Amino acid sequence: MVPPFSYQSLQKNTKVIPPRKTNPFAPQPIKATLFQKFFLRGDIPANIKPVEPGAKVVKKTKKTSQDPPPLVWDVPPESLDYSYYLPIFVEGLGEMEDPYKAVASQGVTTLIAACPEKILPVVPQLIIPMKRALNTREPTVIIRVLKAIQQMVTEGPCVGQALVPYYRQILPICNLFRDVNVNLGEGIDFKRDTRLGDVIEDTLQILEKYGGPDAYINIKYMVPTYESCVMN
Image (tube, rainbow, N blue to C red; front, side):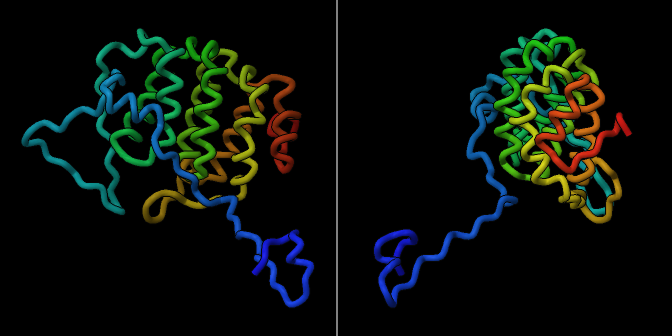
């Protein structure tokens, strides 16, 4: 076996090493996020509420689901420096294990809801953490990030328009997974927000509705199969 495109490959009676098989949908998990480092160091001002002694714990089964324990904040979320903490929490959306996953996911939701007017100035700092989490190619992670984007755009003033210049960073994964409509819930679950393809479609429509006049053409450039929900 000889390397391809080499002098040896031109010789008679030689076999060329075949190209490596690639899978664009293969997960590429993050080894350690900045959020995890800060959490282990005790620099994240939130944590999961501990279970009280003697409290009855209901285990999650295929037929019953249990809501994640609420977060306990050291300070009011709206008083935090969003330019410092929100990018860290967003990067934590790429975590696959608890408590990091639960704290980051609930933390992002709480921060956005607590003070949505603080999101717009921080948008440029959120793009790299979003892209890093999306590039894990983990369907559950992609859904978490897209739901965070939906919340930011619908609740944060002018955030939808501010994201338009960054579509090239955050939409390639949407184009790749748009037709992957796999149910991620346990058992049979017909909820739209658990199917990756539907979450991507909903996100693109929200981006178009809130992104201003240039949103559609920029979405279409990154996701050629997308059809406008506004013009039609």
